[in-house]
Length: 207
Image (cartoon, rainbow, N blue to C red):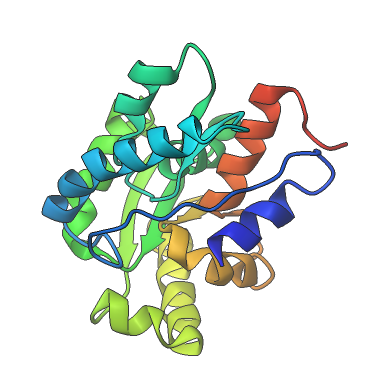
């Protein structure tokens, strides 16, 4: 699903997408320990994908951007490295907008806030809103996931005063696309944001 969304976002750029999945680890990164553990696995997997050739950029396909900094240190002088989280948060804050994050992983609240601060966007951040229940179970029920994320996103806008909402998770990409038609405020989909950044960095942006 994530690869399909990336291909759609890059339509007209001439760029092709190759999806590569880490061989071991949790299906979703739902807590700080999983996020930390994912980083070296992401780095190793990404470097192996680059070594296979035909790679113009690397996108880290997790909202917490595990391994993105390490990859940038290793190959950033050769090719762009873009994380879903950093791209989405920056897009949300563009033009001075206040933004919130709607997502399914309450145990990552501090990690999200720290990421926002590292990017220098904390003054514009209205905070997170989370869905209830187990994230993996919710992700397996698309209609329930969409309804829960819509409620969280509306809370960001109505209760917190956000002017844009980031849907915090790569696996939430389909829901993010659907919510963009349900809400009048900008809904930032991390996969799309990251792909658009890659296209700009490579000078291949469509239109």
